[in-house]
Image (cartoon, rainbow, N blue to C red; front, side, top):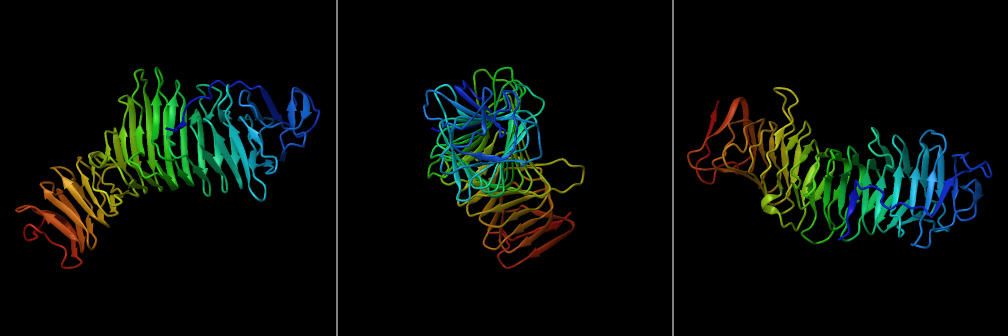
Length: 464
């Protein structure tokens, strides 16, 4: 299986040849001039031990060839490096020690091959507080294990790698990020291999690792997404923030594609794993916590959690986390034609007494069974398929119920909410015999058609 790891250090980094970007020829071993230029096989834009040289491609996997971008800090994009398509540039590790660098492709698009060597994994290295950008028409084609890291251990700040519009990363093997931040902005792409997996945050001491998707599209492959792996005596933080765009745990027709928080190991430390689902469609086979000492949290605030088909985890699609919170923009769960059970309670986000959160929207065919004691206070909307509440206390008091045409809300398992702020729609509401659905004082009852009713007993309503 291929793994995409976000959180491991660049291991065994031995540079046989280290080229330093230097656009002023012959200015001395330690005088490095940042600036714009072309990365090809003809221009002497590189400094090796004080001499101006042209780039020589990494060819022999027994040795590594690294590119380092140094100089004085400058504004973002002030040093633009165009990677020449015809040169078919090959490199092992790219290291950024200064701000201001933007790497982009040529007019017809460029592939920059990043390959591993015997003593060095393919990777990106970013110093604390620095930012490097990969831009338009540039694809990083990674061969071998791909690692993104910060070379300064236990730093209080992290560097950031940004993939901007028109950039892409294609993977064959593993990728890892440790002590760094990676962002996929609008128009960027990550394409994993058939068995790729994503691990965010393999902690060393107090390291912090983050992945942010803000308009990008990520297809991990056929494996899993993991947020956080705490090693012995470590207490780092791993964060996956999904703002807009999409991310899939798998694109293969298999039952793989889990999102897990923590990795069960024999030498566990402590750590924090956070998933922020703010505006992206996240497609996975299930979400669960695998490491007992991990503080695992999922925050819904406008994002969609979509069930991958097929899945082997329909009976426990979401469970075991420390907390799952519903924010002001609510939670959306798309069952995608699958009957799934969510044992994890969906909790009100706690932003002050009396604050109504965004509630829960059920989309997609299939049945969603809520088995935990959820405390979200916003409305429950059934837009497609069926929602079943399982057991007493599955919902407390919610702002309202909206059951769309040809959908079902099943309250027959002794789990009628304590009170409902309003009731509307033209779907079916199923109550067991003798049960009462209470609509709060001042609430609205607005059936949209003859379909609203009870298949077991005449529909009854009372007012608190």
